[in-house]
Length: 410
Image (cartoon, rainbow, N blue to C red; front, side, top):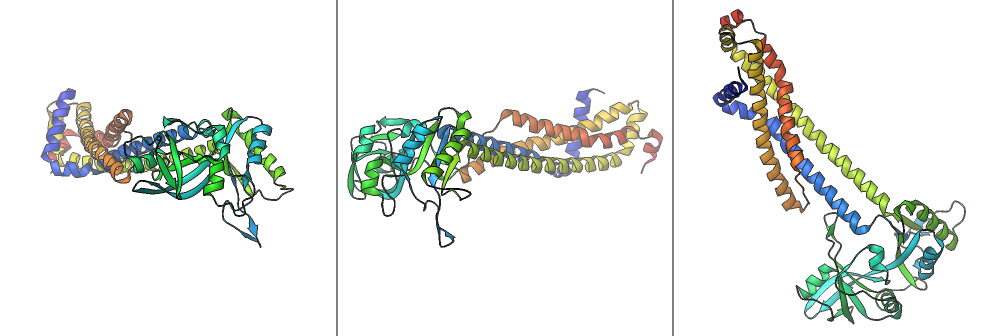
């Protein structure tokens, strides 16, 4: 009995019990659809994380003021003694591996152009900001070091703000008002997109840090020359741990924190944050993979059950085939082929449902997806493997039937 004969026999048997066959393959359909959705969303998440890593850079440390204690109670984050220009200069000069740094002094403010009004984050930064962040401009120029210190009223827009206020027209050379104060737009940063699926990283305005201090940010209780948080760029990502330790020791000394007293600042290693996010994403991927695997196993059990029923129903047919000269391996091949074809049909339906569901999820949740052709092949191969694995026992039972007993079976 050739493979082609086995295939034709399998298709004929499946067509005779079409509804039962479709219901039997539901487990395989769900399993393969789960594999496709899991793989697409997981790959999309990895792609998004890699894009965020690329945009943030893994050789950067973020230093922020912590929270202070008042009468035994901890105040809000950032309420501790602020970081200053002198702290930033000390980090650049005294911590090995740190090549440059910038402050980031933030406030929320309305930005107006003509009859357009948009409330956004306004950040005072130094001239080194683009180099520290590895972030280029798409239009215009950035502030110079002299402008960063001079209190000039210049602004660089994030692409989202530029789009909200100016549409498709270049804003360079135009004048906007921030809290009623006129600023000249001199540049637009490149688009970076959303972070974490909801936060728009292009929704901001950058101004010279001296201007932010004198015009936009309340300085009540902040002390001289605050810089908000400090973004420090390390020459080599292999020096991050050493630089993090050096910054911590330096700031503890400068802020007079002794003994086992708790730090009133935090130093965040972007590489560690990235590592944590990757681990969380990998855990999610394994969880989804386990769900898909369970669905495939359940589907395989369903296939095995229905094939056992099929063997029982077709006992006389099997006895007749053996009596006419069919060998045990021919019967084995026939039922194995039928099991595999059932699983492949379920796999094909599951593949179509999985791809459709993936695009629906991406559209509704605004989640990035990436359908990998290799994963599609793996899903189909897995369904065929389930057919072989769970179809073997019923096929072996059919091949081992005694022809005399089979012909007598009622």
